[in-house]
Image (spheres, rainbow, N blue to C red):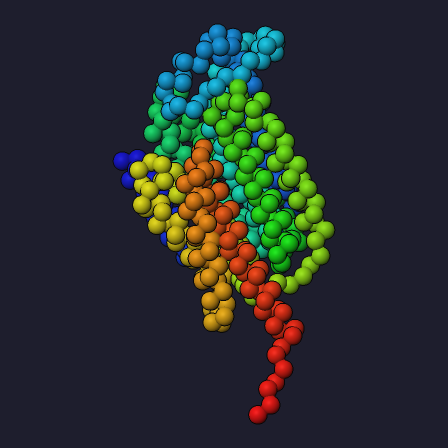
Length: 377
């Protein structure tokens, strides 16, 4: 029954994403909220919860997380040693709420704020359209999270967790509606796109680090994860500083279509993203893969426009083939969580597509600047 519900969410979310966002107008500028700032707040709360949970396990269960780890798959509950910090809390029994319940509330804003941050980096209109989709995205994500609760059923994932997730699914879009602000950002050229992708890659690395060390209760993995996280944070800050200083310039037709398609992808993929991700690992891989293909084709069509030239279609076809050639080895040679493999595959695909579009656009520009001399009859 649970997989039937998840399958229905995938089909419904994809159908909604294909039909509705194309008619979606951007919300007017209002407020000054920044999803990146809220993302930092949520991450801080997630780690605070993990510290308090560790205190609870140390003091109440004598450092042994076996009482809960036997209910979940391998890879959870690698506990950290907090030393004397564990003794500071006066009544550790009160911290039992830190097991699943707090994270049940924070998991949705963590994902939504990260996604909105990425949209905001790319383009103002993409960001504003994504803001209009927060309610349907929250509904789809909440149903998916409730499905996962059922698949990982244990004495702590009872009706309370489901109720908490529903409350979170209401609070998050209400909060987002108050900070739909103007950004003035628009990616138009190859440097813009490259800095955007570097930023997304660094943020993706940090999100996966938080997922492993905190949302899976693996605070013991944090020391090993800190060096890579510090490098990713430095790269992210540097890329965002440079992004503000890049001079506005126009790009060739292939790069322009690629940037527009990427923007539409972020809009279209927002609502079905989580359901597709979990469909891949909960027995619905064919359906999730088909949905993923639709999520690639539709934004590409929207980004190309209604009357593309043959030259543009040929350029994009060559770029797509090159990207697909790089995608397969990147996916299968990457280990770790499914998100890591998808991130690597997406990065390889975009690298191939961007390289071809940049090369072809450059050649086309060179030919336009230096046309061949007319031949005499």
